Structure formats: structure tokens, C-alpha cells
Length: 603
Image 1 (spheres, rainbow, N blue to C red):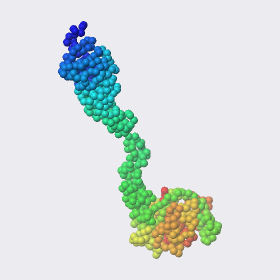
Image 2: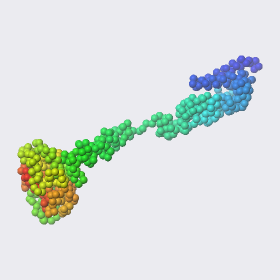
Image 3: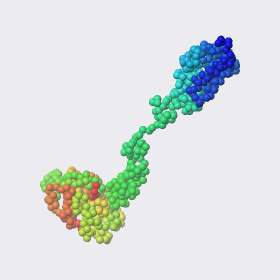
Image 4: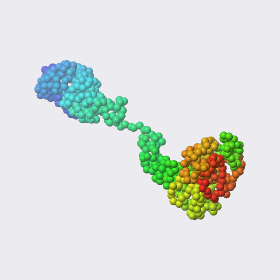
């Protein structure tokens, strides 16, 4: 068939087939959501009434807004508005896209050369139209290269990296974004410049998935609106690393959702500076009686004793001695020491009797003794503490109470009830039996003075009521001698003065406990020498030590009950009576202004 015989209808048929090919090639990748693109391309291809020969050359063109697409041959043209068309080499020449014009407006603006450069041929004949390369309808270059460019065909220009290249898909503006270093899915130019698919910035908003300003969710840096490296914002949520698994992994002892949390006064744990669970310390409410404490302020009762609120009932009122509870007690570690004194007389003795003293044979022989750990009150029992006992009813103990835990038969014997005051009148008679007795009918200035004029039975009963017991002779001497240090005086070898003890010519019964500031023992106990003698659990006998020459462990003399041992010397004693080894005894039912007591407690 010769070119002159090609009919207009035939040419139009060729045109329709070409349009179908274009739609199949261009639109298929976008499917239904880009139908507008297909219709737009079709309108450019179908309108204008131009004719294309079967060999691919253009023989006519024009018409308002018309255009024909060359897909082969050596020349190609796109008709433009105004009915004219321009012919350029289709295989690399320049194609005018306007009404008789040379560049825009058309499908893609400035399009040298061909559809997209001179790289990828289409499968529709001719040599060589292109799809892709540099530059194309979507800028320079489409598909796998280029940056920026004009993306037209009815829409605004897209700037920035598109999905499959820098200027769009197949040079049709593709999927372009407004910026970002990572490729967005869509942009203000939308698909082929027909409007945005996902708004100004693509399917994922401004900046597309890459975000305005940069980055991907796997580039190893924190950028865009990420909250941490490659997570948060447009990326998957960040996973906070665990700092704990269980409460003990945390300083606060509280682990919630694998994170350590600060201490709170309602977290069910004793943490921070709390002294017990959610109480005590500087921020939480005071603790109830029976709960742990460090100071009186940690307790509702304002009475902290041995680390427990409430403590001994004798200090429930918060009675203080030297700035601390008068019921303060110190735990003493168990151990061994040489109890008693040797028989030799020597100068600067360690174990014997100094030449300047007349030692008693009841201190001999010195013998090894061991005691188990226990606690001993820091101070002698005061008038104020004993008043609380009297006010509480001072009932005698039940059988067996007040026993040493390691010494059988050392508890209260109900036979002793006969020697115990029958009523308050009888008790007060004892307490006020002498001019130097410290008791007063009403609360006064003697509340922190050592109580005296009490019998052994009354002292025993008080300690039981206060949650304690009387110490054994061995325990008492162990503390006074400083254990294995075997001190000559409770404070050491220095000769005593009025600052070490209330004793001798200058001694007085009217002295508050702990007043002798230099007479402190190894573990912090006060008045272990002077002030008042102190009752112990043991019965007293002159030759008791001769029966334990091989030593004893947690022992006490229970064979004698009529007299009880008293230790430490009193406010009238000489230096001789201040020594830890010094012993004396008194009938258990007698009272004396020189005798008081302190209590021992089990750990």
C-alpha cells in the first residue's frame, strides 16, 4: 500500500491502536487509582486529527489541542494547541509540545529528546523512541536517575526524590515529593502531575515516608521526626530498653514495666530513707509501734527503741537521756574473756591486784568465760522509766518469764511472789525508804536519775514487763571489762576522775544517768562504774569462782537465791569498787539507795 492511498480512517485506526498501546504500557503499573492519568494521555493522543503513515512518518497534524504520539519511524511530533505541529527527529530529536510551539505546555514540559531520552526502547516499532533515561517528561532524569525537573501534564511541578528515581516514573512525573532525602511515595505533583495521591508530600503526608528533611527508618541515625535512631515519629515505635527485671535490680527495689522507678510512700516497699514499709524517714508518715525506726521522729509514738517504734513500754512517753531514748540498748557481740582477777599483787598489773589496793578473794581465781551475743541497756533504769512500770500496775511476772534463753531454770519462780510488794502502798514504801532514794511522788527533776531503793524482785519484775531480763554476772563483767580487752576500768587504764564516774568523796545520788562523759565503755555503755550498784541474775557467794576454774559458757550461779550479786560500785565507792572484776552481794529482798539496775535483752 502506497502512502498516498492511506485513508484518514486508516490513520485514525493506527492512532487508536497507538493510544491503546500507550495506555497499556503507561497505565497498567498504576491500575485503577490512576485512571485520570490514562484518560489524560488518551486525550493527548486522540485529539487533533493528524495522520501517521504505516511506516511511522507523520503526514499531517494540527487541530486545537490535538497531539499524536510517534512510536516509531524517524520523525515524530506532538500536536499542540492552535492546530500546528512541529516535527523533530523522533529518535533523539527535539519534540515540541505546544500549539505550534517548541516547548511547554504539553504532557511534560521541556522534553528533549523523544519521550525520555535515548535509553530504553519501547516494544512498538520504530527506532528508537524511549522510556526512561535522561531527560524525560518528569524531569531529568526519570525512573532510575535524575533530580528535580519539571513534572507537568496538568499538575504542579514536583521537587525532590520520587519513589523509583529523582524525577518520577517513566518521566511522567511519577511519584514525586516535596523534599526529603528519602524517596517519598507521592508529592505535590502526584502521579504524572495529575494531582497528589497522598497530599503535599506523598501518601504519608508532608515529606512522604522519608519525612520533611531527611532519612529513612533504617539509616542508623536519628533524623526527620524520629524520636530515637530509626524509631518513633514516622517510623515504628521505639522500644524502651529494660533497666530491670525484678525489684532487686533497682535501688528503689521497685521495677514497673521493666523500668526502675523512684521510691514512693505507697509502693509497698521499704526504700529511700524509709525505716519501714512506706513509713518513717524524711518524706513518709511516721511508723506505728512495732515498725522499724532510726529516730523518735520516725514513730507516731515518738519513741524509737533499738530500731523499733514503741520499744520498751517504760519509754513509751519518749523519755530521753543525753539526747537519746533512755531505753537505748546496745547489742554486744559474744566472745570470751578472763573473768575475775589473779591473786598476785603487782605494780601496773593487768590481771593481778595492784599493790595500792586490797582486792577481795571473791574475785579469784581468774577463769575463762564465754558469753553469747546479747544486748544491754545503755543506761541504768531511771525514775521516769520505773514510774511507767508503777503506773502500769507492777504485777509480778508469770512463771518462767525473764529467763536467760540459754540457761535453764533462770526464769521467774512463783515462790518469789511472797517477797514481792502486794500493793502500791508496799511498793512506794520501798521506793521511799531512805533519804537518798531517788523516787518522787510526782514527776519532777529526778526522772532521768537512776532508780534506787528497789529490791532484786522488783528489778527482775520490771525487766520482764519491759521486755527484757536481768543480765548474768558474766554478761555484766564482759561488757564492763570490754570483752577480751580485759580493761582495768570500763573506760581503760586511766585513773578515774569525776568525769569518769560518780563515786567517792565527790559522789552524789542526785545525778542524771550518763553524766560522767569520760566513763564510756567499749560498746558505748554509761555508768558501768559508780553511780549505783546494779543487780544481776546470779546468786552471790564468795567462793563461786573456785567452782568454775575450768571456765564456763553462758553460765550463772542459780544455786544461791537468798543473796544476789551486785556489780559496778556506787556513788560512795572508792576506785577499788569501780573495777569490772569487783563483786559484792545483797539480800534479794533488801533495798538500798546505793543499788539500782539495768536490763539485758536477747538479740
